[in-house]
Image 1: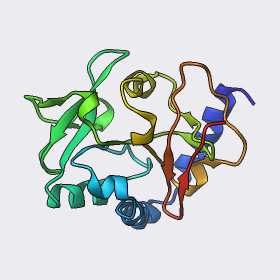
Image 2: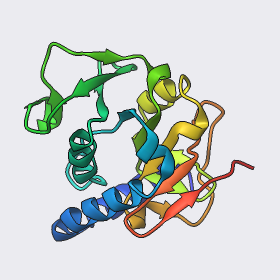
Image 3: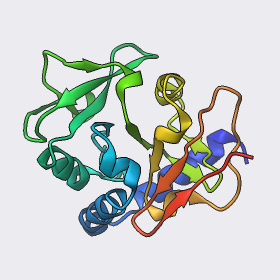
Length: 189
């Protein structure tokens, strides 16, 4: 199956996550993330603000802020690039294009090399650490600046592909994948 067909398949799976599971799944994701020593020990964490039906990590972000972690989220600044911007509260956000939550300006930008870990959304992941995004390449370009062992893919359980995803040379790999029901330590073959 080519990437276009796979994206369509996994978009449909994400759309089919029941709304009532988003809240409980968000808490399960948070609990799993806090069981990972690299996350517990991290001072600078890049998270993301979930779109509707995307694997939601708001519960994790709230707890990270409560634990006095520096939390950053991505902001797209061009059609090809994103930056990491600090947030201090989930209540202190604006609504951007398509109603997506974004930090209010002025931005406090983090250099990617400062991050201790980055939580990466995706449309699909495989158990080797392969990731399929939405196709624009924002994360792949950003992740090139971050060591593989700092990357944690986040997904709902139905976004895990039991088959290897097609990976192009520019596609970036995950070190760990976390879903509400499991944490997977990945090894690129």
